[in-house]
Length: 406
Ligand SMILES: Nc1ncnc2c1ncn2[C@@H]1O[C@H](COP(=O)(O)OP(=O)(O)O)[C@@H](O)[C@H]1O
Ligand SMILES: N[C@@H](CC(=O)OP(=O)(O)O)C(=O)O
View: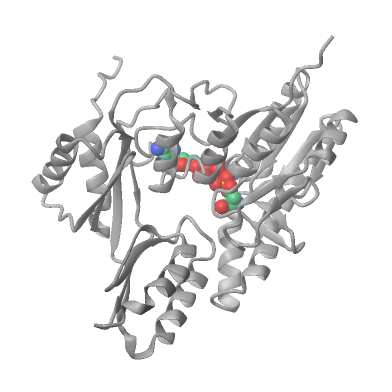
């Protein structure tokens, strides 16, 4: 008889925020482990990562990236150990492992490391020994043997990488029962999407929807893994499946926003275009959204909510600008804007969608400063205080309201 395939279950920070919720997760994991081998990936409890980040920045800003990663990785060490203890208390064998112990090898970009390889031998050995394996998400180890972290929300990426390495399904549990047409905390009419393509989900994550990490979705696409996004409470049964070629139609499927952006504009003095290759070398690794570089300089947006190393990135940018001396005409880092994005398929080539979106914002006197397009998103740059109204206006324009059951 063949043994059942393993499953990777990932529980986010909201699902392990306190001991009661950790006990619930433990119960759910133990029930599942009666059916098949289970690997669990956990995030840090509740707001732990934010608290650690704030403490580091209170001591030194920007904190050195290596030390910050060492500190932030401790959040997941706490939750993984507590979950292992809660499972042991239910009478099942469990073992907790750090990213490094379970063979997650990354490059050395601290704060936004990318997984280059997973060596899952220890995980497989522990499963074979009858253990439920609990892994601290969001972290790995570089070839230089330093602890690295994968960027905000990076535990999703740990889960997908492990699922690919051990040929398992990947289930992501959070405080919402799937991916919605907008943040359900913000838009009352938001509706759950049954399925999404990898491209749409990645665009949604990059546009600011916290529910899944964009690197996780990219990795899932590369490895052909479906992601099941579900609620961590077993009585809430909905889900969204992110997979290849789901039945979909062109058009807007969801709206997301990011109010944490810093709009960066670096301009070169006349006759200084010889610096362009250097500008490319310095700005491209910063991971800015909508980066544009030309003979007069460069512009783009840095999302502070999606990364832990934003203050370091801004400090590096400042140092580079100063090094240009007289060839720098000016540098601006402005925080008063938000990007509000419509996400779907075939948007770039559809003038109708862009016109309707623009008109719906204009009708509410929401000033659109710029529009950025790509095949899966249309992003509107608006004043930060108009972000929430813009989200609701775009959602009302594109997502038909379903009649509520009486
Ligand atoms: N389009 C969306 N669909 C579902 N949830 C969303 C969306 N946009 C934002 N969210 C937010 O994402 C949250 C879940 O992600 P996150 O906070 O990272 O969970 P966890 O801590 O469990 O990993 C939800 O509480 C919800 O408010
Ligand atoms: N703890 C990390 C990693 C993570 O994935 O968190 P969550 O699953 O709660 O979004 C963070 O806060 O960014």
